[in-house]
Amino acid sequence: MISLILHGSNGHMGQVVSDIIEADPDVEITAGIDVTGEKKRDYPVYSSLTDCTEEADAIIDFSTAAAVDPLIAYGTERNIPMVICTTGLSETQIGSIRASEKVAIFRSANMSLGINLLIKILKENSKTLCDAGFDPEIIEMHHSRKLDAPSGTALMLADAVNSTENDSYTYTFDRSQRREKRDPKEIGISSVRGGTIVGEHDVIFAGQDEVLEFRHTAYSRAIFAKGAVAAAKFLSGKGPGLYDMSDVIG
Ligand SMILES: NC(=O)c1ccc[n+]([C@@H]2O[C@H](COP(=O)([O-])OP(=O)(O)OC[C@H]3O[C@@H](n4cnc5c(N)ncnc54)[C@H](O)[C@@H]3O)[C@@H](O)[C@H]2O)c1
Image 1 (cartoon, rainbow, N blue to C red):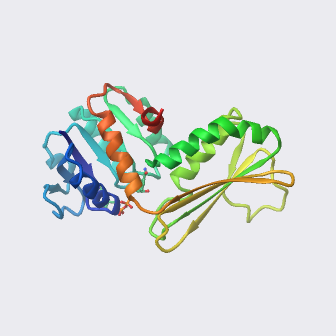
Image 2 (image 1 turned 60 degrees about the horizontal axis):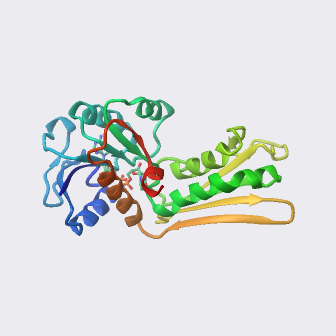
């Protein structure tokens, strides 16, 4: 049995993770941590990290960017591997996660199998398209409550395309103040926000007289929760290091 601490346990994702774990006999939640401090399930919920002394094989985090630094300090101090799913992290935060050498950390801005497979496909094929003059553009759509834009997933997809071109492309998030043609060495990233859209990502390669599109649609948050639980199982017992979904799906 793998035991987990759930950080951000009372949020939308925290509750879906709780549902997935309730139905999984191999995993249990020993404690939740959430600023609300409200107990919603059959595990205790602490409003502060320092109050949580329960044992766990891993921590799953779906909270907010500001809460991630104290969580990493806590997990490192207690030597508990962490699955960091929160998005909107700053470059400094991502840098300190990459530099972590004391504990296993799994970070992915998107825990779904589909998006991580799409990243693999993009890494294998973008160079052919970019070298042939296709212009990469990404459109992402999310619910109206989402705090960060563009989505962490859109940036992951852009990075996958860019990595095949030695990171020589720049990212354009807004063309409204420009009166010039599109730079062939740019990746446009556009964000749509509204309603209850769980998450949609389109990667478009627009070429001369032909367009190739890759689309991933998330119909439910369960895909992210399942990925996070799979990541926690994978991480349990792992030594220090930085892991992501490519380690799980190969
Ligand atoms: N990586 C992925 O696959 C993936 C998928 C979905 C969402 N996310 C990200 O996960 C995060 C959470 O998403 P959500 O939709 O559940 O948001 P949410 O706002 O519904 O939930 C966040 C929870 O964190 C709690 N929280 C806030 N500050 C805290 C703190 N200092 N300590 C502990 N808890 C704190 C809030 O009270 C809330 O219950 C977001 O960053 C979102 O973009 C990632």
